Amino acid sequence: MISSVTIKDFKSITEVTVDLGQINVFIGANGSGKSNILEAVGVLSAAASGVVDDESLLRRGVRPGVPLLYKTSFRKKRISSHIFIEARNSDAEYSVSLNNTLKTPQPCWLYKTENLKTGGESVVSRGVKTDKNKERGLAALKAVDLSVSDPAMKLLSLLSGYSIYTPSTDILRGIQPDSQTRSPVGLNGGRLAEAVRDIQNLARKDNYFKTVYDDLLQLIDWASRISVSDEDKRLLSASISRPRNLLLFEDRFMVRGRNTLTAFDASEGALYVLYMAALAVLPDPPAFLAVDNMDQFLNPRLARKLVNNLCKWTFDLKTGRQFVFTAHNPSALDGLDLTDNRIRLFSVNRNNRGFTTVTRVELPPDKDWPLSRLWVNGMIQGIPSI
Image (cartoon, rainbow, N blue to C red; front, side, top):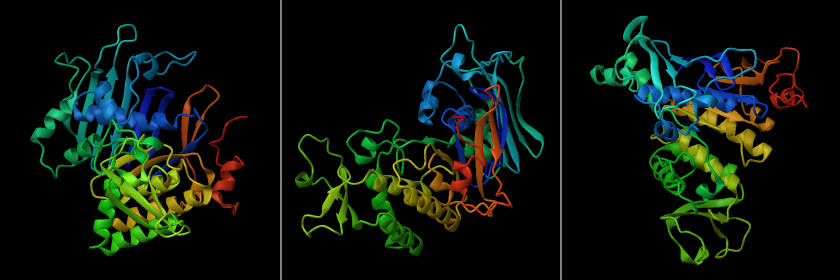
């Protein structure tokens, strides 16, 4: 698991260190820099894989950007020649400084420095004076010589597998393709029907997955049954692009025989619940991942219950999967048990110079209020100055 991340001179972040838990939620005003934190880790992920260019960034759900936008550019502050990002766990650490000229940007960012350490001892070290092929990372090459059990290799694997998931409604419904498809689900919502089928197949063999499936039916309380079938022409208009597999919901309030809805007609909140469950419980997602706007599409009470279930599913599964979320719905915070040190809430703000700051939220001892109320009332920051 990643224990801490340090980011310097990236977008609105001049210098920030975040000590992570297993479930990490970032709240803050629009434009405070929450997504910048997720994307900085995405840049580090690309660096750990050996190259930082638009293709490697897009593959991780990071918005590509020119150096003019990636490097901080605050008034009365010297623009740094490079961005610096570091990640650590209990046994190893990996850091890079990346450079790309402002006036004539190149397709690939150049490695200025790169360090991989285990127990304080250097595994890979690259300095400023290294002239050989600065577009390629040394750590990714060194990984060929490392055993799977080596702490340095484990850290590189964690980082290189990282992606940012940002589902979109049309892709969840299956009417638009996902440009970043993955197993079990794509970064933008693709393969949802296949993922639900995987959960159902596992539920027939394993009590844990049966409990998860029962939880899903409780969260989608209007549905008596969820199923996956090959395309059913009776339930889709001829004008709608047909996915290979069709996600079906049986509405328990409607007349039998006319109570089946497809993903195209169903609530987008129901689709999002299924998507998040797939990321939490299926075996294929990366061990370290982010979801931007984890509470989108959701009714406040559903957001609270889903967050609570995500924590339960993750801890019960005992895979050690680590999540980084951003959130905007105050009710989602009420699903977090901050007395559990594995669950951490961070408030992201801009100071009076515009720099992004990150503060871990601790429960105020003198306020017996839910987190949602504390947030809306400005007692844990993370709100706009309006």
